[in-house]
Length: 468
Image (cartoon, rainbow, N blue to C red; front, side, top):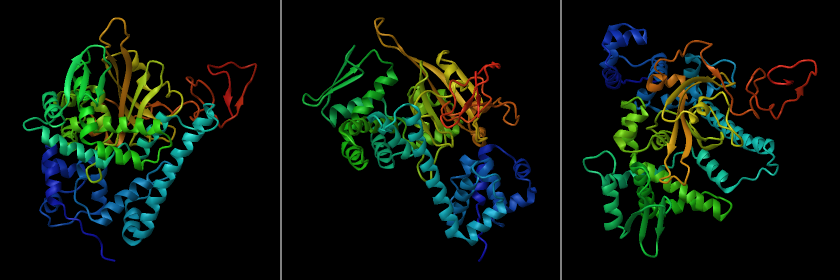
């Protein structure tokens, strides 16, 4: 079989220029000579599998956009599957290359089998946690069913995302995101909706019979704009949303209605932060949330949530996990495009920085954390307060967290200043005490559900038992 020959001189040169590197600096990063790099950039020589692996590892966000052949895509998928902590040691570049080139059917089946394994593990986790939480029937409430539907979809709905992006093009001219005025104009002129700004009417109330939309004017400006966007897409993209709900296979009417609301919220985010514009700006700013929210006029939470949805095939964003935690430690929003998976019942690990952030509003905290499988993550968390508009109503307090695996740290500004290489620098965390296997955690609230405990009346440690 002929060896694949990948010529990507223009992309390699563009990557070097985007990083501001001289040829000598780039050659040093790749471990090759300057003359060899020059030949690569002029397409006089093809990239070797070892160089492709190095570029994919060190420049994952930039190199994923290189137009690749089927073998190269197969190699990348195989490398990701084979790097699962399930395996004691990863395959070498040469081994992966030989499998991808000489046994393509086997490689495809291995990748598919690994994906099925991951999905099965996630479904089993739902059942395990339901049983551990005394939800013995394993039945899910409507909001849990909708939450899990989004998770299984990868938190990305292509049909709706593209439709919202097209709609955003109609509403923008000189701005990167539709303004509140542009959305109001479309609601009035195209959809014949009357707008009323008033206090204490609920965040948003729509009367379809009267064609009247009320918006609570006590909300922050970005929240008002989001509610306008929600109503716009709920009407303008109603057929698309309804078709997705119809095909979701949810059990009851409440679940279907909740999914409609969730999809309208998703589309509102996609309208205000159009996919390609938002993805490119996020990369330019190294995913600096405060700067992103200024560019697109959205809230901190909205920007974080949108980053977790950038999973379009061929144009993926950084693989993030995202969650929102309330003052009691309940996870009220969650999604992970990483190997980190959240507990679906109960609270999260108390060692995770997001819990500290809840008590310290408007301050960004960062953490290097390591899960029991040995994977390390950079976490950013910030406590937020949403005003109620009245002294008689308590404001809402919560925290949001966003993070990625350390291999993407160079593209995540919050990793700056962390010692990513030190074995002692990472905080050991788990998904939740019910499923965490760590036996030496002083913060454990209760033992794992699948392990027995050993109690010695003559020994008292921080945790009053040992795990068998």
